[in-house]
Every structure is written in structure tokens, then in C-alpha cells.
Length: 239
Image (cartoon, rainbow, N blue to C red; front, side):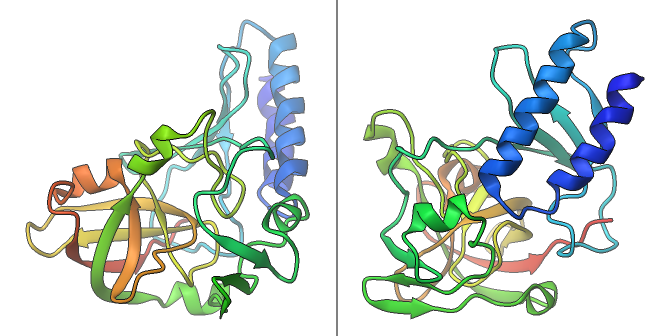
């Protein structure tokens, strides 16, 4: 029980998301505490993901630190979907061609926690993301593509636009204008399949496309082989 009481206030502080690597160090501290209480292994408590971007809708969101392999990660569930968040090392390459975020280099902005809805530049074009309030009302129908195969050729791994380790098998997505991170439900209008994904990256920077899903998400939605699909996207609201 002691670890739950320690983790809960730390998790609440962590959820403010003001500095990604500061939060990662905080998580490391939580892992150290859990190691002291080795009999607990994995602990859980309520975790507010991206506080200020969520309201009523989905329940049972959990926080956990996995220390079984000597590394720390955050895992949480939204309904039947499980999400894992891992901070990428700063020397990992980015998944995209972002030139600057809020006037800084991408990695400087990530270090300082200046990513969420900060303006950014790709190939000389400036993009201005939505406010959190605008994002809560977001709904759009358009063409989805997928990405991730290209990152498998890189040594080590790749970093998303908000500093997370990119895993093409996980339920994640890239969007040009949503705050990072954000959760959306994506429905494939051709087959009726739908799922919740965590938006943690920027893209797709191709005309006519509204969202870039991980290859794993594309497989679940049934358009991996086709490459493109017409989808409906809606912001997921959490309690």
C-alpha cells in the first residue's frame, strides 16, 4: 500500500507534462521506489493522461511502472486498449523532417517541454496546431495512411515529435494539428473497424491525407495492404 500512496501524488505531478525528460527522471525515481519494495514489482494507481485535454467519456485509466527488465515505462489502459510510453534517447533520429518547434531545434523543444501545441516548421512551411479547447471539438473525415516500415532500417530507434520512442507495432498516430499527446478514435469507413490511438507525432506531410497511423494500427483497422483508407477521426474524451 505504501507504494500506491507514494506513486499517486507523483503520478499527478507527472501528468502535468511540462518537461518530458523531467517527467522521465521522475518516473525513474518511482521505479527506484518500486525496486525498494521489490515484492510489489508493478504497482497501479489512477493516472491522469495529459490533464486539461480530457473530460468524461472513458474510465479506468491506470498508471504502472514496469521494472522487470531494469527499464522504466508508463503503461495505461483506455477500455480494451493498452498504451505504453517510453522516453526516447536524445541521440535517436526523429521520425519526421521537423526543422524547428517554437523557434527551437526539435530536440531542444522536447527537452524544455515546448511541444504540445507549439508552432513548428517542416520544409519551410509553418504549421500552427489547435488549442486544447479546439481539439476537444475535433472531428474529421479524410484519408489515412500508415508509417513505420522505414524506421525498422534505422539502428537503435526513432523519436516522435514529442520525444517518445516510436514503435510501429503500437497503437499510435501522427497528426499535423492536434496537441501532443492526444487520443482519438479512428474508424475505417470501408469495413467499420475502429480503434483508439495515441497521437504522439507530426504528419502526414502529404496533400490530401489527414492522419498517419502506425503500421500496427493500420493492420488492426484492415488497410495495411492497401496503404490508404477513408476514415473518420474523433477526439476521445476521458474521465
